[in-house]
Image (tube, rainbow, N blue to C red; front, side, top):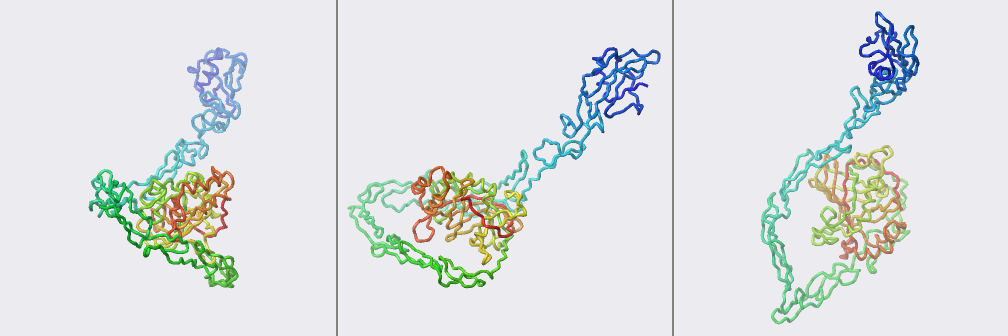
Length: 630
C-alpha cells in the first residue's frame, strides 16, 4: 500500500508538486491518507507520496529525476523514488524542523503572532506547540506584571496600586500607579474641607475672613460656617497728613492733603527724634513736641528693651549668660561667650565622672554609661523636599508671628521666605538627592498620644538599615538607622526636640530657640551646610490606627547670612553659577534679614521655607555617622 504521510497534505502537495512537478495526480481527487500506523509518522523524517493507484490500471510515472520533485521548501528532502512500476516523488521532513502552514521553522522557533507557541518537532511537526508556564511573553497590558504563558494565551498579574490610604483613589495608568486625593470641596469659604480616615469628607466651620457681598469696605467673617458682615472696614492709617477713604471695589485708599502742617503725605513738623511726638497747629502751622515712651534704639548693643524716657532713649543691660558653665560671658559690642577649660562642671549625667570644662564644653568620663536607644513606633520619612520659591501661603511660614511683615516682595499673609530667591539654584539637586536616598530626613514623634494632644518631635538625618537596602524608600515603609550626630548616646535622647501640638489633622512643632543643621545638595559633589534657627514645622497629617501615615506641609527657619556666606565660600569651584566672591555682595543686596533669632530686637537672619511630603517609616536604631558631601 502506498501511503501519504504528512499533515497539511493538500497544501503541501499543491505547492510542492501540483504546480511544479508534471504528471502528478490531482490531490483533491486522490485517495484519502492511509491510516496505517506504520506509515503515518508525524515526526521528523516524515515521507510524502501520492496514495494508492487505481484498481484497473497502474498510475502514470510521476517523475523521472529528483529535480522534478523540488517543492521549494528548505525543510524537506525531495527525491524521485522508484517503487516498482511507478516513479513517485517523495518528500522527507528534515530533522528538528516543522512545516506549519507551508512555512519551514527550526526547532524552538516562536510563532510570529504568539510568543507562547513554539516549534517542537518531538511533539508535532505540522502545528505549533503551546508553552505553558514560560515567561517569554508580553500580554500587551502595561498594568500587569510577571507575564507568562497559559493554556489560553499570555496572561499577567494585575499590578496592585493600593497605598492603604482611604482618602486616595488608586489606579494603574500606563504601567504606573496613580494615587489621586479624594476631592472634598463643599464650595463654602467658611469651612475647612478635609478627608477623614474612613475616606469621608469633613467640612469643619472656621472663623476666617470671608467675602459676603464683594464689597471690600465691609468686614466679613465666618461664624458657625456662615459668612456674616460685622461692620465697616477701618481705613484710618493714623497719619493726619492723609485723607483715608474706602472704595467697594478697591478697599482702602489713601490720598495726600495740603494744609499748613502737611505737604502731600509729608508732615512739615518732624524733628526726627523717636522720643518725641511732633505736633502741629493746623491753623498756623506752628510746630511743637511732646515726650513719649516709644520703643527706640539707643545704639548700644549691650542693652535691651530700649525705650524713651523724658526725651532720652535708654535700655537695660543685656543678660549675656548662656547657661553654659564652661563659657565666660560678657558684652563687648554684643554678647561674647569665651570658652574656658580645666574648671570643674557638671555634664548632667549621673553615670559620668571627673567632669571638667574643655574648650567650652563640659566633658566627663562616660565609660560607665550604657545607652540602648528606643525609638518611637510613630515616625515619618520625607519623600519630597523643595525650597519655597516665593512668599505665598504654602511656600513658607509666619516665622516672626507678625502678619504685617513678609518677604520677599511681593508677598502677603505674613509669609516669611526671604531666601526663596535661591530656590532655583538648589531645587533640582535637592529633589534628586531625596529621590536617590543621598539625603534622608526622618521625623520621630516621641511619646505620640495616638491622636490630638501635646508631645515632642525630633528631626534626624538617617540611612537605610542593612537588612532592607533594597527597600523602595520613596513608597514603602522601610527600616532606617538614625545619624548619631543628632542623637546623644549619653542620655539616650535626641539632641533636638521640638514642642509639638496636634489639633485635628493640623500638626505644629518648634518655635523660637530651636536649631537644626541642614544640608542643601547643589551637585553630586557639593552641599551647602547651614543651620536653621527658630525651626518651625506646620503640616497636615493623615492619621490611621494611631499612626501618622502621611504628612504634607512646610518646614521653616532662619539662616544667618554670615553663616550662609561662609558655607558658600567653602564650596568647591564650579558648585554655583558664580564664584563665591561675586555671590556674597548679591546676597547683601537682594536678601534682607527679616528674623530676630536671639530676641535682642535686631533682625539678624533671613527666613527660609521648605515644602515637604512624608510617609510612615520605622526607626530601628543608631547608625554610623553620615558624612556630608564636601
